[in-house]
Length: 214
Image (cartoon, rainbow, N blue to C red):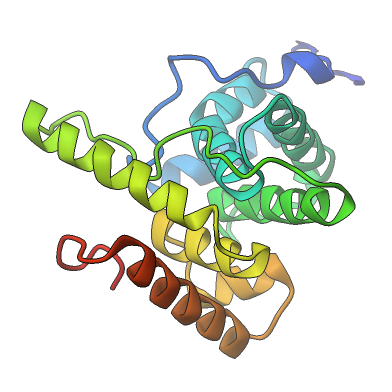
């Protein structure tokens, strides 16, 4: 990659690594902070790109592993996600309607779905379907982990399109419009896919805690 102000950018294999210091993907991040980080990256500030990766790698890895299944290909797809994002980052408007996190998940979704179409990938999830929150007590953590594993295993039985709609809407919190943009289909199609995915998951899982798939 090219030399930028503030030093050499990391090479392809150094862009992202699923380290333990990555923040929980369910921890909200203020929009103002996200926009400021984009501007720092665009200005070539030293370390800004690495900060962007650390901030978003957990969500990208989780989405790709749930979408394509566990395996070494997940790291390759995550690497490609961030490399494509960096290549297009100068054209990203931090003040625009799209959030950086949504944009990254859109890139990851398209790469993951394309990988599924090009070759057979495993469908076993790399991580539990739900992230354990730091504030949960041990009993809540155990129950949440159990529920997460059950949802992840059931989601692996969905078709690619339904799985993507469910993951992006219900586990990653994107809006219907954002999922439609990420997957390249009309909003009504996203709603139909998500509805069918939830119905199938309910039939596979039986009774879940109230609101788990609402």
